[in-house]
Image (cartoon, rainbow, N blue to C red; front, side, top):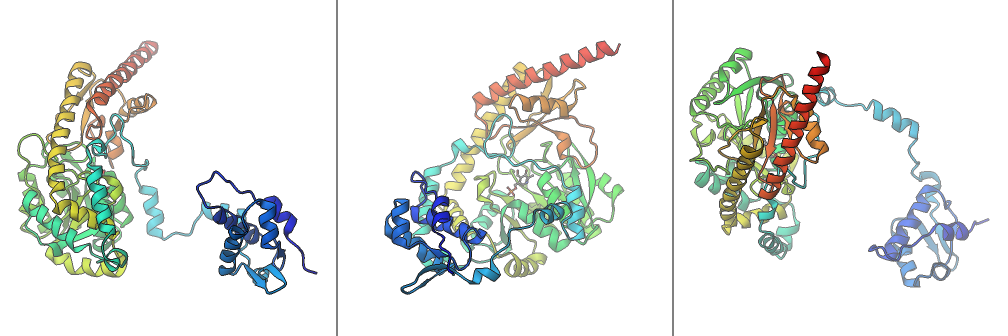
Length: 506
Ligand SMILES: Cc1ncc(COP(=O)(O)O)c(C=O)c1O
């Protein structure tokens, strides 16, 4: 005998008339869940569309629309003159709900590749990268200065293009117009002679680091890594199998002599020459040549991460490392996360000629690229001149915010935190000189809604410096001023506590 599903069905269906979701979609999803979960058995007869419509207070067209979708999915079938039934196929093939015991077991011990399992153990603790700036968030540019209307216009223009261009697969190595635009920008502004064929577009600098690691490193290869250094690049290289060698940095940047002492046979070096991440110094020309020489001797590659080098505001910037590279060993990586905005997830690498063929092969066979719409909009933004004027405007804004931080620090943080003047970028550091723990200060600041990352977060081996990394680029001067006040109170509070503790110990 055929069972009717009417009662159970009607009781379980709840339509939300305030939801922006169309009613027929809601009904389709609800019926689908009832069928797949087994609440309505295979072979059961559904109420007639007319009855269901009446009972639920819906139009019959709405119910028929939902039934049509279920029929197209093979979940129900109509027999002429006999009604609508839940498909018999589901008797044998209904997806079974996962067994909670099996899920718990697999979550504890998933079967992973050995390299991934080892890498996960060594990853830096990862906080979610921020989307909204507050004092003193790093990593975010000044959203308040971004020309939203211009961006929206260019994005809409793209979607009015030919369907093949807009909807089809794009060039896996990058949108040709964007590759051209980046190459001209690098020639004009970063002193790098290059052509568009050397530019490979990636999903952010982060993907560029992973790609470079995957094509150049064997498990256990030694990689010189600035200590302290960039957290994202560190994770990408570890995942690619790198054995990171923590090379100290001083006021001239990477200590090449120490790198040679620790690991003369290295395969790759990772550096941030324009603005060391996180300490902020610019790598001296002498060190740049020493690094190039050491790499040439060892047959090693160099990654130059020029993440915020566009934003120099103190004197004229030193050229990029790539611009003085006669060895062909420097792979230059750039990002639009600072120069435009991070949700783009758009970066690129400039490959030396020896790697162009390999990258063409790997990107067109394996990765297959970044959304065309994003790339095309950025290309137009650059070609129409908005990028250059945006960068000029941002430089002024960052110089102002840098000054605001310094002025406020001089007034309020003297004797508590030495905020180091920076020549470029969107962040700087403050050195604690009261013997306080940077981790404790950072924790106490967090409790007052202030972000101040301890330098230790960026370190892969102990470093002599203690201090806080302070972003200013994404924060308006008034918020910087207020944030400095709170930070001063936090440090004073920590000092009082430390004094009390010292007295009770005596
Ligand atoms: C040192 C460094 N390099 C590169 C980037 C940009 O990475 P992505 O392009 O993946 O956003 C960041 C972001 O904060 C960074 O701190």
